[in-house]
Every structure is written in C-alpha cells, then in structure tokens.
Image (cartoon, rainbow over all chains, first blue to last red; front, side, top):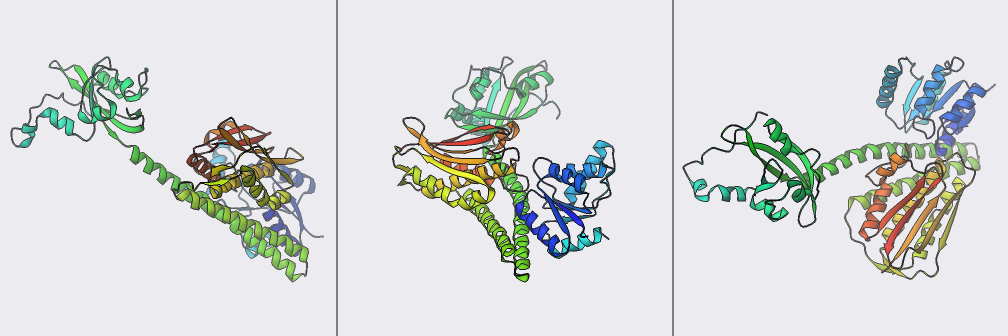
Length: 130
Length: 361
C-alpha cells in the first residue's frame, strides 16, 4: 500500500505542488492548512512522513514540530521542514526553545529552504522513508 | 565623564577671538546654547537659540523647548545639578515655527567660586536629519530581509506551479496542468504587486489630479479582484452612494491604494479559519459635508492590539510568510499626499474596516 505522507502548509500553492509531487511519485498525500489541523490529522492517520512549513497562522510549524516530538506515539514519524526561513534561523530558534523549556528536541529528518527543487524534495522524502 | 570645571577660564590673548568677544562667539556657535538656574529658568541664550525658540530668558526651559508645563522625563539639566557631571540625552522639541525637531542635548555644570553648581549650560544640536537617515537605513535593512523572504515564497510558487504543469502535460492530465498554471499566474500577480509597491514607496511623487468618480474607482478595483476572491471563496461586493460627485483625485494612486486594501482584506479572510463565509465590501460614500470616504470591510481575522500600533510602519506585516507589509505603507503615503487620513476599525477574530477619508474637491 502506498505510504501516507502528510503535507502541512497554509499556502494552497505549496500544498498543490507537494501533493502532486507525492502522488506522481507513488505516495498517498494528506494535507492540512496549519499546525493545529496538522496535529489532528497526524494523530488520526499516523502518516509515514510529515512535510511541513515553519511559518503558519494559528499554530506555527515550530510549535507543531515540538508537539510531535514530545508525543510518544508520533515522535518517530520523520519530519521534513520546508520553509523560506533560513535553516540557521530555524535551528537557532530550536536551540533557544530547548534551553528555555529545558528539553532536547531531536532535529528534523531534513530541512529544505524554499524555493525547494522537486528533485531535492523527492530525494529528502526517499531518504527519510528508508 | 569627569565633572567639568566651571567656565572661569580666561580668553586667549592673541588673535581675533578676543576681538570678537565671548558673547559674539557664543552667538556664532552653530548649536543651541542656554543656561538654566536651579529652578530651570533660562538665564542666558545664544543667537541660534533665539532664532528657533524665541527670547526664552526668564521662562522655564521645558516650556520654551517643548511647550510643556512638565519637567522633561530625562532632564539632563537636573542631573548635572545633582552630580556635577556632563549628561547627554535625546529630546523631541518644538521650534517656535511649529516644526518638530530632534535634538541631542549636552548639559554641563557651571560652578561658582566655592565649587557648587550655580547654573547648568545646555548645548544642543539638531539631529533631525541624522535621525531620518537612520530610520531610512533601518527601513532598507528590514525591507531587504522581508523582500528576500517573500521572493523565496514566490519562487517556490512559480517553481511548484511549473512542476505541476509539467506533470499534467506529461500525463495528459489537463485539469492538473490547469491547476499548475493557476499557481504560476497567481504568483506572477503577487510579484507584480510587490514590484509596484516598491516602485511607489521608493519615489516621492505629487498626486496628478484628475476629475474622477469614486464609484468608478471602486468598480475598477473590485473587477481586478474577481478571480482572486472567487478562488478564495470570498464574496467581494461594492456599494457606492450614487449621489457622490465627481472629485479631484490621482486615479492611478487611488486605484493602487484601494488595490492594497482589498488585497489585505482578502488575505485576512483567507487566514481566518473560524467563519464559514467571508465577505469583503468596498464602499464609497459621504463622510461629512466636506469629505467623502472609501471603505474596505472584511470579516477576516481582525488585527490585534499590538499590531494596530504598527500597521502603518514600514514593512510591518502580520502575514508571516506572505506579504511585505509594504501595502499599508503605500496606502498611508497616497492618502497623506491627497491630504486625507485613514481610520482603522478592527476586532480580533471578527474583521477589519479600513476607512480612507478625503476632501471633496
């Protein structure tokens, strides 16, 4: 059966792009528009991989990522972050939050800066699902 | 800094300085000089001071500098009285011409023979221009950061859209190709909006007035957004008071201004996940006998209090990954150039109305 991959992005364009990429590469895409909906779907459908944006309204990707990684049932789902935010800024924010909350959250399986090349994204997807 | 010695030194005995005399030298100094006593009354001023603040002698310094009956919060003069040291502060003042200016103020104690502070001399320089340049530089830095972020998102949209078109063509799936093409077109639209706003905000231009009907302006702009609004599932309506006369406006600029407001309203609806139906209404109507108004009302996310204070600052944006925040700055500039003003009525979670009020002329 095709592996389920959850795409979380508030931008419709990005959701269409990534779900098309997934469909044509033999995966079963699911999509959500923000962190809150993303978490709900992730809990229900237990996808094999989550591809998510960082900056989203309502619940940001930063929060969603930490909630995923703090949930014993979901923490092993690999996550690929795709964002216009630079990798350095994202990792710095994670470090600051780790220190502030006194926890250590593991790094995402991949971090891709927008604009993401289809091939680059596909490679990251395949690597994370190995 | 060490306490300064009182001004008891003797003038140099050689050259023109002596001929000019101390008073003339003080008058010639290209800065404001005043001396205040312990009760903050001005006892001495130089020519430059008098030119911009009036006579001043015998009056309270905060009255003269700021027109305020309260002592300035960061009063450097009082500090110098207290600790006999030099103090520096930045103050906003009002010149007697009514213009506001930013000063950098140095205060230094004047000691009497027994070493007590008899008075404090205040020397200030007008740094309004420096401050403006500083603001522009900050603006430039921020704008480049936000623009590059925006560009990445648009590039992503273009690249992603092109990919979807390719896949559609490859599989002979025209519906998919059409979806991709919509993405490409949308992102071309975004980039052209950004480009036009940058162009507008980077140039100073006076409005080119023409006689136009406000209703026509509203209809033009609403027409431009039909596609975007239906793609977002937002109802876009316009209501104009037919009794409104033809007025003098710069139509290009007013269209740009309305364009930005409608764009924002649609984005605010798009961000709102709480309500089932979204509506944006664009109106033109009388405001009072001498003014008319444009209104853009949405029932989107609304603007929270913190953000309200910042919305007209350069590049302020709550849109996160979308929007440069340049839009409202351009709105503000255009409305001000027309001698009008903008009012914002908003409730977080409920929606926002931007009201632009212009004179009927």
